[in-house]
Length: 69
Image (cartoon, rainbow, N blue to C red):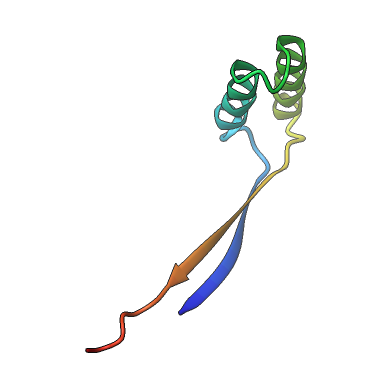
């Protein structure tokens, strides 16, 4: 078995809809209030407009082989 950790780093606004969707889901679940949601999204949109965003997404890749029988 092998496992590798990778990190995707994005500095533009391509994933802005994904991160704003997370904020909307957090508000819908009651984890944050609507005012916090709006403020956070506005901040992310402002950073994207100024090309000042950084989004890092860690993920893991695992591979294995079944032993011969």
